[in-house]
Length: 263
Image (cartoon, rainbow, N blue to C red; front, top):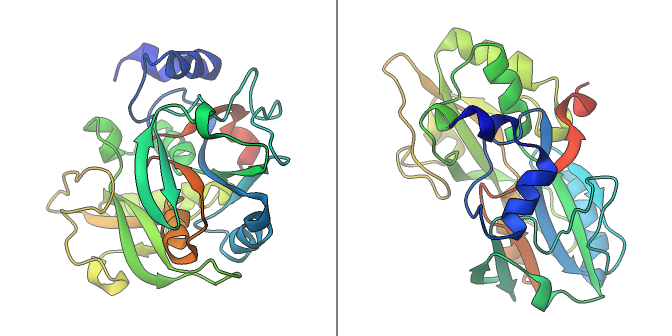
């Protein structure tokens, strides 16, 4: 990943995404700026989903919510358009994944509510700037993500188990990464588990459910954070008639500064 990738302005990256010039993951791009997960639902489902986020703030830290039918959120970014500014979207019908597309303008309607959730890519910057090796960045991969046996608190029709993201560290660096990420509670905060993946229901660390496997050194163990892909599992359980999310690793890059979320 070159310097221009790291320093590109969020508005310029969104322009490239809108023009189809960037169609892949956003990890490592626009350092210093908040990246968000996306969930779009019919308005009649919005109240229950908002409660699900409130009851599960680690995997679902709510950054912003749109008004009904609105796809511009000026507080998040200049000229930002939720329909076009994410590299890849996932479309669900009745809880089933239907398709992955790069523009949802044609399926947007005036009854939809969008939720923007904090993303671990925000605290990755803090880890890197403090000398830690974030493996998915150094290996130019999408972060590995796994379904777990950890149950979320249900809200209305929304329930299911937590999804986690993983970055490997030795014991000393894992402690430092924990301290650094704990300063960012609105982007998942401190990790939830270190070490044996089977204790949280992960059977094969080398086969993530989303993203890419990364190298784990002989002196390292996996460190797991709650992940914003969790709502996609909850959607499978709730089965709303229609829903759109980001594709794992493909985020909405905003004009908000990561430092604004630091506690």
